[in-house]
Image (cartoon, rainbow, N blue to C red; front, side):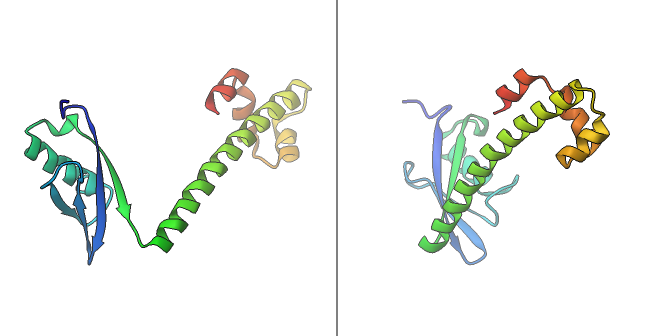
Length: 141
């Protein structure tokens, strides 16, 4: 199997002020970074290390960085990610419902200012929601 266009999982472990990064499926690849994200973060550093080791262009390597945290922190981080995903679903449903209500209120001849008072939103937001097509609302969820 060619290494080009492959996705690699990098494991990042905190050591002092640095993240020590390895790629278990490619022995010998090691790098470090001060941050997990950004242009000089863990993903960029391990991508460059893999490109050198495998002799392929860095832009053809996809990296997933998995930080290794103490078990208690890892568990809480997973709970936070799950709660945020659930909140995103609820927020999308609320936006769809608000857009539907904004369209119905304005179609009933209620001004966007009064619709905003009813909905607890600014008139500008009511106007944005009312103009958003119903199909777009379903596709955005």
